[in-house]
Image 1 (spheres, rainbow over the protein chains, first blue to last red):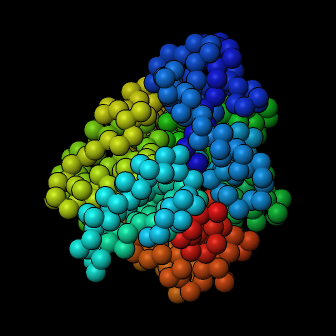
Image 2 (cartoon, rainbow over the protein chains, first blue to last red):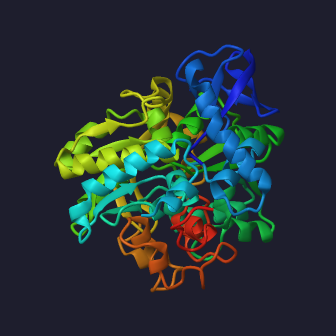
Amino acid sequence: MCLGVPGKVVSVDGFIAQVDFWGVTRQVRLELCDADVEVGDYVLNHVGYAIRRIPPEEVEETLALYDELLEAAAKGDGVDLLAADMRGELDATGGGGS
Amino acid sequence: MSAPQVDRLQFRDPVRARALLDRLRALTADRVDRPVTLMHVCGTHEQAIARFGLRSVLPPGLDLVMGPGCPVCVTSAAEIDAAVDLTRRGVRVATYGDMIRVPGTTLSLADAQAEGGRVELVYGVDQAVELARAEPETPLVFFATGFETTAVTTAAALLAGPPDNFFVYSAHKYVPPAMEVVAAMPDTRVEGFLAAGHAATITGFDLFEPMARAWGKPIVIMGFEPLDILAALVRAVELVISGTPTVENLFPRCVTGPGNGRALGALWQVFELTRGHWRGIADLDAADLDLRPEFARWDARVRFDLPRQLGDGDDTAACPVCPPQQRCGDILVGNARPDDCPLFGRACTPDSPVGASMVSSEGMCRIWFQYGGRPELGP
């Protein structure tokens, strides 16, 4: 999916960060990110790479859409493709690599 | 359109949504007989439009269609055949989940797996690199699909120095030339384009400027939330009506003119544009992303001598497994809707897909099927 998923940087070691996505910590590579990131920053993850550092003033608004999608995915009727693709990104199972 | 329908949508700001819809209605009031036609080129946009039921509230003077925005859908059957053939030569093939069920000429990668071929599903290129590292004596080919947004990650993995038994079979594709093909079709109704916000996060919007001028059609960068989409539609219609073929960025919180320089640097360091076949559409010049010669040691096309088979421009030939009545090609370029295809929902379903557009979660047919066949209303 081309939406990407935002997460909070927990640690940084060179080009490799550990990033928290709604309680799930995953490794994300940083070499493609548009700006240097520090612990506490939010990044937009696409198939394991941060493609954008989300400016602090935009974090809350960005997360709101995803919160809503995750709620829909949790209902789990499988009808909601957008929510399911988002869940798939978090679970690292999804996608056609768009 | 009645008020309750708008209220059913999940707008965070219904007042602003209504104002945007009123504006769209006013702008297109005299185009009911010949609707203003706008094309978006992103499966995630289609998911959002269907999910939020946006088409149900658009005025009759506006037609919103999807173009070639599903990378799985446009991957050529010949490339899938070559990936299947690799599994028969004892090579492990890793690819994204949606790819394995797409039919090749005779088999899909799922079929190859059932035959005993080693096919691995991965979330991203780094997982494929790790699989190669874990079994260094076996060659592993990453069958890399996706548009430029995903190609940058393949580029980064190659620049990081993968192991010698890791190879990339690039089926990556570059979207702008496909938009140009649609824009240049003599019978196209498309008067303006909506470019995908997050893809433009990487590419920026400057590259669209010469295209909009050359095609005489505006291009508006669009976000993914209902209000983002409505605002972009309003601006695009305004530009169409006033005959202003410019680029406007309606997603400024994510997209800049030059884009993400680091990602673009990696992309063009590793890849170059070449002629390739887009399933159901045509052979397109400079629309496939191939590894540059400097990366030949990791290039599966070189290592395994994989031929580059181009189609002959005939959509039926491009999709040899498809019956003649299928409309995949027309749907991919926005000339038909999924429910125009006689196979849609009958012979062609997600459980038994005929065309690639029914396989991928970013394919228009799959999205429409999932949201009830003709997603005029949201969930």
